[in-house]
Image (cartoon, rainbow over the protein chains, first blue to last red):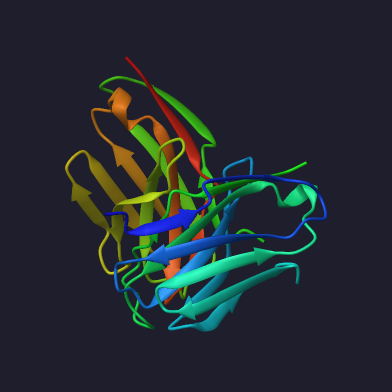
Length: 115
Length: 110
């Protein structure tokens, strides 16, 4: 059973399009995240949700909008895609609210290529 | 502004050798310091972690050394194996906010 699953795994699209990446975790965790990994492998936090509530929102363009319908799901919608959005997007979850256990459980990533 | 600085960017070690990766952090509020291992095409996975109340933690061939006063910590991989070849990330967190270093690509030559 996949603990944190993302779809799609690969996404190739044209500039200007709108696309979504879905994430689901079956670990019963309270907190979910989106990270962006660029071509140099740098992992940058984008958003964090705790029990469907946004708790971290880094300096990310408004074109990126996370949505958490329930605490097991965190989707990422991107409007008006740009070349610089090409990256691997990782969803992650962690078990506890507030008190930090530290461990993030990552999905396998969604590689977005904008042409 | 990168809150966690990691070096080296890449590292080549012979099989059986010791791999050492270093990290430094700025924010003294961080209270959890994990290391993640990432293989190509996969997400990062927790390898080992330490809290600032201890100076060293060992799990098998992997050891974290932590220097709170210097705000530095390092990962030592003893008896490095080709299967250890991966990208390693240090991180620092407080609460739900985890920040990663830039990663070290480790290659262990047979």
